[in-house]
Image (cartoon, rainbow, N blue to C red; front, side, top):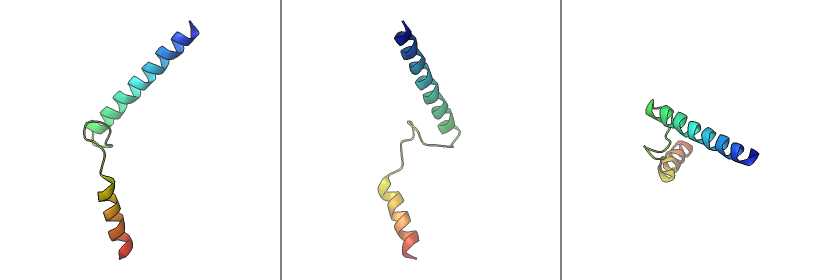
Length: 53
């Protein structure tokens, strides 16, 4: 019975964390699921431009 309670608790925590991250994404603070993550190549090109100066 304790394992079932632990699994339910873990599922609730993960669900709440996901909802919090989606709320933060909606307010423009982070990119989580809906907007997707930035491309690594774009970030690397910007970094190369900054370091080459």
